[in-house]
Amino acid sequence: MSSALAPLRIANASGFYGDRASALHEQLTGGEIDVLTGDYLAELTMLILARDRLKDPNLGYAKTFLRQLETGLGLALEKGVKIVTNAGGLNPAALANGIRVLADSLGLDVRVAHVEGDDLRPRAAELSLGEPLAANAYLGAWGIATCLNDGADVVVTGRVTDASLVVGPAAAHFGWARTSYDELAGAVVAGHVIECGAQATGGNYAFFRELDTLDRPLGFPIAEVFPDGSSVITKHPGTGGSVTVGTVTAQLLYEIGAARYAGPDVTARFDTIELTVDGDDRVRISGVRGEAPPPTLKVGLNALGGFRNEMTFVLTGLDIAEKAALVRAQLAGLDATWTLARTDHPDADVQEEASALLHCVVRGSDPKAVGRAFSSAAIELALASYPGFHVTAPPGDASPYGVFTAAYVPADEVAHVAVLADGDRVPIDPASETTALEEMPQPTVAPFDGNGRTRRVPLGTVVGARSGDKGGSANVGVWTRDDASFAWLASYLTVEEFQRLLPETADLTVTRHVLPNLRAANFVVDGILGQGVAYGARHDPQAKALGEWLRSRVVDVPEALL
Image (cartoon, rainbow, N blue to C red; front, top):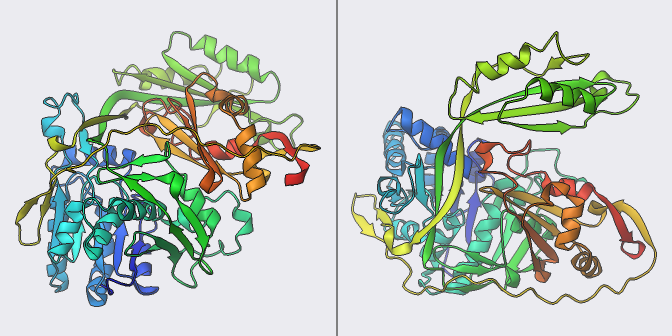
């Protein structure tokens, strides 16, 4: 690795299980880096891997990572690049062994270590966690750091916090202490920015039309982490996408809650983040403060919730509401969730544009009752229901669905272990200094002084947004790009106005967290996703477009801001 006085260049090559496979090779060949990370785990991924493990106890990890290493492992060794990944999923030991087998077949001498202890399923009853398919504590960075300090070339983990893939290498390289809270918090923020791959370089960006480099594959992000925990977010030259204060702000707001961002090693204060331009495609992150972590660890619980099936009826032309009511009456008695999407347009030139979609989702414990018994009953209406009856898919069987819940256990109940390349096992102690997490008071924001004429335009004309899921809840982070717009946003977009603009949230608990340093506000909507993404409570099960819906709403914006 580079000198301890220089930044440690930590690249990301995966934001989810299924991300661009070529990214790992591209990050190794596109420029100089010191560490290559890959994030493969999400709440839904853990359920997928749990089902893999049910079929074969030797599985439970991200199999695509091994295929990526077929061309990448030798390159990384040649360049002296360390690889750190959570692709181990539910079975990091098996993936670590698979890498050794691959290295032998390629004639490579590689030191592979792994981190374990996050799997709490064998102790679920003891810890009052129910009977989940998977129960995984979110471990921190010190197991990774221990493996790297022992000379590992590749470190495989199971469920660690996403940012730990950056914090671990930085802590090992710079020799940070367990109480180097500001430095650790800075690395957490850098890790949060790059953990979702190209979302930091222009992907899924609200103002994407302003970026002129989206016509080629987006470069994956790199965090140049400095000894004081500050960092510069960048990407390899010549790659697609852009790194701007806007793209970094958007990612900072992704899947967060309050200003205190708690983790197993440190609580990062998102209200202290400072962003500045550091050149083309370079954004500096500085000023981040950290505090002692809470005494508990989050545990992700994935369980089978039952079985589900669905049918979508196409309603065309006139009397859409009455046609929907007829179908619902004809299928009365079902324990079903009905949603009518008014995608129809009056006097349409194209038939599809004259059509609305009536979705019916049924769930239950009996796969037969919600399987063909339901879908066949729906199809039997084909000649006996509304005019123009047709559906989007043939009748099908029920499929199992999962539910996600979060629990918390004392950190000292989790046996975090670094398994070194030679097989030695090193226990990782929990944090010796902890602080219970407390909500921060809402900051004071300067009042907007631009009273005057307004114009009705989409909110997104002046406001960016990024939204995502956390279990059954969703967050919508919104930001502006100048102080005047933020002063207006902070005064205008209250919880009540948010719920008025998004009526689906009106009966749910919504909490607003204001971050003046980012010219941003974050709204957390509890329960909008039911029991998590696999439950499928709504057509956008991960709330990825919730922010774009908000931006599309037409509101009165001061003309001075337009």
